[in-house]
Image 1 (cartoon, helix red, strand yellow):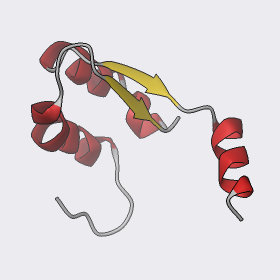
Image 2 (tube, rainbow, N blue to C red; image 1 turned 90 degrees about the vertical axis):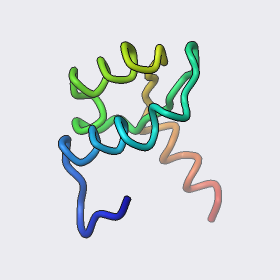
Image 3 (cartoon, rainbow, N blue to C red; image 1 turned 120 degrees about the vertical axis):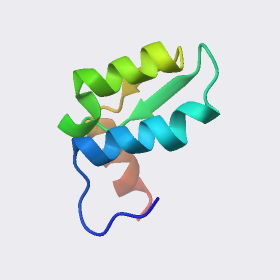
Length: 71
């Protein structure tokens, strides 16, 4: 799946439905960035009901600190 430019909730939900869910097992944990597109209730419901997976979100400060340590 290729998208030119930034993604939005509609495109992200299509990715979750068509690409991600078929690869998940019940009890899997999906780590997402703390973005509105990812935190959408319908998107989270897709993960929980269709895949039986749990969504967890990155803390921005931890992610930023991790990236700055790489330089």
